[in-house]
Amino acid sequence: MERGQPGFLLSQLGAHAAGRFAERLKDLELSPADAGILRLLRTAAGISQQELSSRLQIHPSRLVAILDNLERRQLVERKPNPDDRRLYSLHLTKDGGEILQQIGRVAREHQDALLSALTGEERAKLTEMLQRVADAEGLTRGVHPGYQRMGK
Image (cartoon, rainbow, N blue to C red; front, side):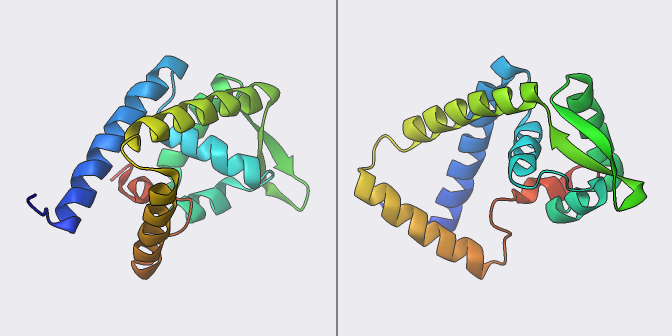
């Protein structure tokens, strides 16, 4: 069996997985960026646009465009921040919470299909090793680095 270069394989699989996930999200009329923002708002309800932009390392104007679309679809709502009237707090709506459940189902199906060649034990070991590499690279857990390239 020919051994591939791990860096190349990670890049190849990453591009493949990202493309397939984007395809799966099309049925929900969402992009991976939309899904990531909704997921983050589930755990950080009330976060300001400014703080969200900072966490995602995304240009604020690009974030505003994404949030405007999610708000138009009634998945996210902006509320005045009680501590600073200049800021808005971001919250999932009921519809946002419901679509987040659908995103979770799509993500689980995607992961199961992608990793179908591995046993449960192998998946756990792979996850552990990849997390160590991501941590060593200084990647923020739970935040896709693709946000940094948006709007440039």
